[in-house]
Length: 232
Ligand code: C5P
Image (cartoon, rainbow, N blue to C red; front, side):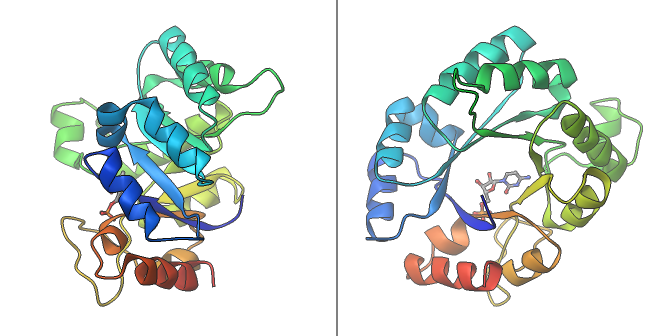
């Protein structure tokens, strides 16, 4: 899979999501389904969107004991999604178990990427609550390397970290980056942002874009603009 724009479908239900996707007519954008939509609608919404011909990043961020994650990943793999994810904090053993669970009888599997540290966690919480006494960027890079060693395909990271992740883990190790905004757009609650063109420059493999597309007056035009800037 090459560079692509993934639309974060952060809608409360299936109806709104399918109506949103209807606007794209012939186009089949790559979509991200997160916890809110999945927990509201269950696996059926994944089957429906897949049946319409979209690629799917199922963003459920699994984190549990290795055996539980392995079994859950086997179920998600049968939904035929394209990308799944988990928390690297679950350890290399959990990540290897996840890969085993994801692998189908014919040897194929969805891509598996790791969340390193959530961007909502700051240095203070890292030290005082998680008791990790290390600068955030070192923690992020160490978790990315651990994911790579466990055999994962990449990480979700800030666009500002993508270049460093590629330096450490190789250019084939995928960087999937949210926090994207148009130069003339509203930042919303995102603090550290990049434009699609800048994300392309620094070598991000996939950008995850929500509100700049979903809340746009013309979502199809906003999506086309993202594609033009990021993929060219
Ligand atoms: O609307 P917006 O473009 O900010 O949406 C970004 C999407 O990426 C949301 O679904 C958000 O949950 C997700 N995300 C993020 N930052 C992370 C990880 C995921 O914004 N570090």
